[in-house]
Image (tube, rainbow, N blue to C red; front, top):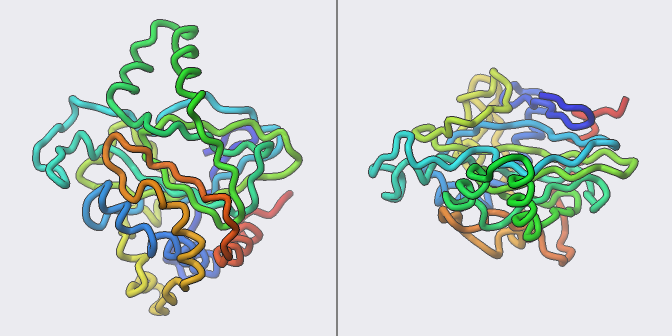
Amino acid sequence: KMVRHRWNLLLPLGGGGKLDTLTHEVISAVVTHTSDIFEEALGPNPALCDLSALVVDPGALGQRLHFDTRFSDSEDDDDDGAHGRGLESQKRLVTAFVALNDVTDDMGPTMICPGTMSQFVHDHVSDADGDAATELVLGSYEQRGILCCLKKGDCVLMDSRALHRGSANVSTLRRTLLDFAFVCERSVPSTYCECIKSAVRGRFRLTDFLPHSTLAPATSATTLAPATAATAATISPTLAAPRHLPPTATATTPFSNAAPPRPLAISASILTATALPVT
């Protein structure tokens, strides 16, 4: 999908090509150290449902605050949901954004508003009467927003029900993120709009990216190497608070100001160069 200066490039996976392998390696490096978060939020072995490079070019306007999926207490509510919370609380994706280049505050970084993934906040926004009232309500939440200014290889996890927006890219540089998400297949949100190649849809689950797994048997049997300790040092600061995704907690934790080694940068820079030539 494409909006002026802001677009998604759908990425291949499982086809045996160089880009397929690089994409698998980067997802694996993230998932190896965050699988507990995905499963706490979504239940055992959730499915890959989004996979793209999110591109924001110079001149991109800022977006309005929005939710990717809506909180609902009326659709398919059920006491048999994962962790005994009912399907309503599970109607979300957990999205990972991996910076494929350094993202400064003038490059249109994503703003995420912690603590807004609740029924109260969703009702507060939807019940606003008219555009002016809605802007006032959204403005009140924007005051708590966090701009995700990242170094290449940094990762942010987000609950799809959190208020967020892409800000304006007023720089002369392109901002590129690897954007992938997992979902519990029993509780796909009714407002979910998938962003994934049809050839990839439905083929991969969380465990396919853990160190013991291999690329799809139909394409390649090459086992991916486990993430190194240095990779863990890069990813783990992102998860310092929180380490789980309860329904009302923030799922947005940008990297700390520390400067650990960034081994993801190598794969990420190759991925950017291969997938996103500047024309």
